[in-house]
Length: 93
Image 1 (cartoon, rainbow, N blue to C red):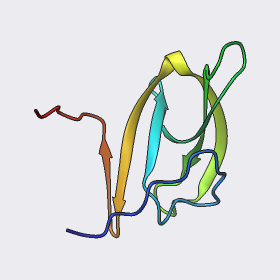
Image 2: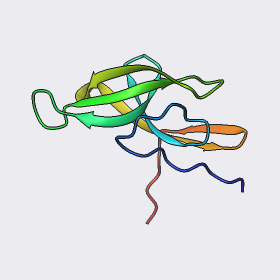
Image 3: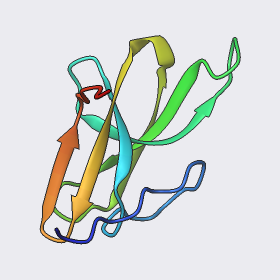
Image 4: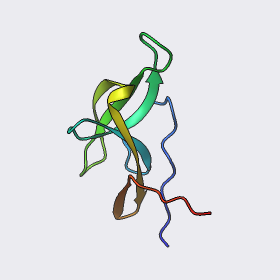
């Protein structure tokens, strides 16, 4: 199995995600964004702040804030040469 890149740190603004895996979220039909932090506007942690990640260079792009209720989350698992979006996990007992 190839080496998996570590999860991007929470609440840290990165310049690029080339050597990171990350938690992602989507805003409706929009593209996935890398989670940076949860922020508070009207109630505690009601907004998700994230950034676009260029799919070719993994450079950080534009920053967005999205209401928490409008988001779905996934895990972007990266290894050298491969990016896999994990959005379903089966529970095993």
